Image 1 (cartoon, rainbow, N blue to C red):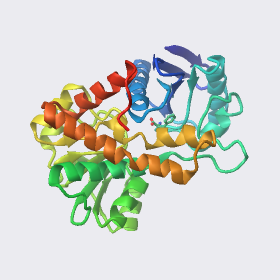
Image 2 (cartoon, helix red, strand yellow; image 1 turned 90 degrees about the vertical axis):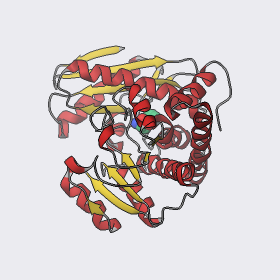
Image 3 (tube, rainbow, N blue to C red; image 1 turned 90 degrees about the horizontal axis):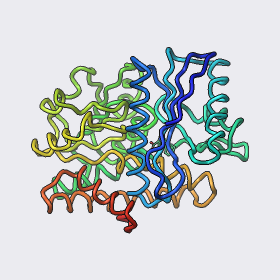
Image 4 (cartoon, protein in one colour; image 1 turned 45 degrees about the horizontal axis):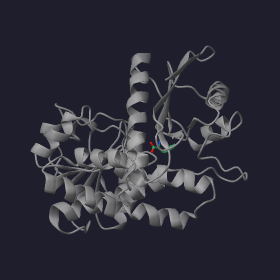
Length: 339
Ligand code: PHE
């Protein structure tokens, strides 16, 4: 853990490095108001662990890391720029052990500001153009994962006549809703920000679901696309779906919640696999190693990766989370990734 306190904004800055067996750590920078700084620290540690498994599963030689800016209240304008410049200097002091990128609460523009202080940042276009936004790439991966899950459960991956409840119509939820609607699926959407939910519903001919009703609403797929830990002992018994497949990191409050879902016959697409589209896009596009089309082609393979995880875990009678973890651990021990 790298811990620093930013006096001007009273922000705790946490950088968690989980496992660097495969390479230097890379992972997003989250900015959020937490009840206590400890919660921000814990979030950084759990998110960094997820990144270790994410990189291993999708076959990148990178380690698990994540940063959290635990702000006392939302920051904007000059104050925000100053904070990101100073955070960039903290990242730079690690000399490449950790590289950051956008995550919940941070934008591609914030990454450009970080880029004034360090080169170890992704989601910035150094040629002066638009910064790379990982959101639509993450959404594509989730969409491919939803198809794999539908095929596993129903033997048919068509979205026609299927409903997807998107919780969080933000940078990932919004483009995901469009993919679903374009494929003939029905979009149900809830968001803490009612305007965001209404915008996506209008765009897709979907329906807004009140936040407190979202867990108990009938749908084929429940797609958590915002904060983590929405799946827990209280919410899982309420679910009226066969599939949970969304982009949020750390969707499960505890590992045991994977078994809870499994026992209810609900197929869970492990978060760090299905949401790895952004992680696939950022290093490949920023380094110029791949074109956007090549990146999308690689993300479409998530369908196969997830199918393999679903099939293996079903054959072994374990939850997909455990199946995914075992596959990732094999890679960390020197084995080949699933792709
Ligand atoms: N924050 C996103 C994720 O967790 C995208 C990201 C990936 C950002 C890798 C930086 C590095 O996958």
